[in-house]
Image (tube, rainbow, N blue to C red; front, side, top):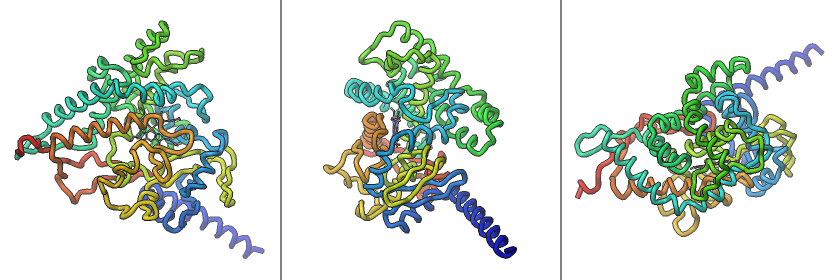
Length: 418
Ligand code: HEM
């Protein structure tokens, strides 16, 4: 009997220690852990342990269909987003519901229809903004031997923020440096604070958020400028077809106060910034997983694989993109790979970068336009090369693959090269 109890205790300890070690391994090498498990699973579903829960990875067309067909009361995108962004603390008390639609999806609809329909109207001014901002960045950078030395990722962040500000908030606010600095700082604060708060006991979360966000300074600046504008719009209830997103609050919901409306805009602002500034989407995407859903009620795939409440279900996009079943020579960047076959905005298996099912990214047409405008202006005007081809360009945290701020790209004006 004693032997059985000892053996059982040993197994239990071994299991929890091994699980913890594998969970920690996920923190520092998430993408390679997922890739290795994906290759071993041969397109079947598999689990990856993380320090807080397990991620059930689904990659076949059928299993992705099964999980996207599950009701939001069972698998929730917003509950997953709440877990990693911690909006209650990082977005200053802005409480998200676990299920989308509980308080309306006005802004998602606005992005999907209003913003996409108005893209042709926005394109000339967006193109001009990208051109001017790019020239400004390059002219202010260190210059030697005919080359401007630019830290690529910080520059892309500033460029995307400036350009998005025009569409989200109008040209006047986009010219206001205090506002655009806050608009740049805010997503970074949310990302870092959200991550640290996940590992902090709940009773310390507000204090930690306060310290990291320097008293929610960037968010307060956004509220300071946006509050009066939103208030004026709410009062007049004027709907400007060619106006900014601020006009798109649902008409019928009395709970949409100024603070709530600004909070909602600021949350969408977060979605619009952080992925656009990353680089090539297939070969060097910014995340090894997509389509996150938190399990709210027990969930089972038809093959019997079972996920418990608290776990996440995700799609291992990077592993799919590096799978030769789907892409020839998958690790090679081939600029003509998709020409004439697929469009960047397509959201069909195996192209899962925009997510899956009913939550597919509503900002993808806008994102695609901005990415192409930036690429167009760079390719047309400059020859680019890495300052140090051997230096590491990314660091990894959980499933994220984050470009390093230290990566320097040299820009040479094509006109000067003759
Ligand atoms: C390259 C850039 C972008 C990528 C890769 C991307 C990707 C995604 C993904 C994977 C999701 C979750 C879908 C799911 O889980 O099934 C999502 C949702 C969302 N995205 Fe994007 N996105 C990008 C740019 C944007 C932009 C520019 C905006 C706004 C203008 C935006 C607004 C949103 C919103 C509001 C949601 C939530 C949708 C909902 O609740 O139904 N995204 N995006």
